[in-house]
Length: 235
Length: 235
DNA sequence: ATTTTTTAATCAATCGTTTGATTGAAAATC
DNA sequence: GATTTTCAATCAAACGATTGATTAAAAAAT
Image (cartoon, chains in turn green, purple, orange, blue):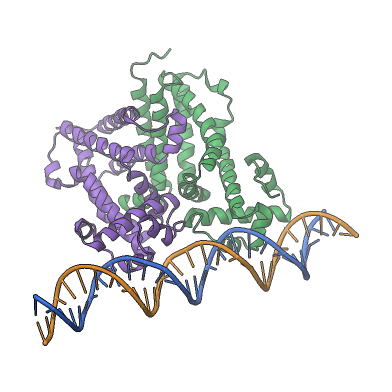
């Protein structure tokens, strides 16, 4: 296989136990690691192969070169995020369109909780975040891939949840911007981790630190939802 | 000069009108542009020199190589941020320690306003943000440079402002985390601009869009301050 | 036996750096 | 004041090393 599989195709391919599947898994894992740390241009195919314990040529064979491996990484990331967000994404839009404000708010906070846990504790989250920060903003078509695959369907559902929780219209601009503000809070507190650790005097983010982070973001986002609810007439 | 000047030294050097000062300015400007777009590893010294209309050897001559030019860029950034944040930084700690809650909140919102305007409209902000996220946050010693030069003194003062505005103790962990949440909101809405433009259906961030962003962040941060003030006894 | 996968060796291109020559304007000498 | 010396600065050219890609043969899997 030389072209880029979709996230769903990729899931099946990587789940099989053929020798090629293992090589592909190892190469993607290794590429994710190196791309996230040294960036795409800063990573050599040799170091990727070495970490994966595979041959350099296997990158060309399985992914049609370095660029193809990068595309596979993007799809792999989309797959991973899709799994984590399945709680939100798996529900059809029609399922969440009639939630009560209280139910919607509970769902939002539940989702926030999952996102924080994933970004702060998942070993792969660091690689994924590093990878996205360094590479996604670079190529328009790769931004498109992630946007349509993950971001837009996720945001659509979160917007509906916010709309139900605050009484604001789903198409409201301030609602959309508020969601960016919300996501920004929990993403930044993860990707600025070196600064957070220094500032807080922490050695690492363990259970106690995770609880503190969840507590403050919980309060902040609840306050944001309250503010957005002002002037709206809940049923 | 082959070693890295401090931001203050750098300011004097770059302000002079000697031939070498112009070359250094051009090289830093060019490096900032390329580093911010294609990353450090993805940028060749040849492209830096070409954009700066300088010779390749001038990088080794003035900055002791590509890595030295990167360090100079970091100091230049520290200098720039220091200028933008001078409203907050120039005040001594003792000056803001006795502000009333209302005065402190006004100062906070004024600072937020400046940060949003800078990040959203300054032509150099995109390069600075891209450069810092892609390269700086992964090198411990460069994190140290920016942390001690800019981040810590800035955060110390913002923490005092937050303490005055909310009645929380200055050493409160939740206060420190809340400030990260606040900064995350306005930084993310800038660095995820490609996603923001797509999501909002905007072509660019002009005066109208800037006003919308300021409005929602204004409300969000005010709500956060209100939440933090709960249970505290303002004088 | 046929296909799939891995391997080592090699390719042209590009990387950051270094070199020695050259410039032009101060500094020193006469 | 004229000449010489000095030195920071720039330049084109070339360096060795490393890059991603390619090749053909060996090995493994089916």
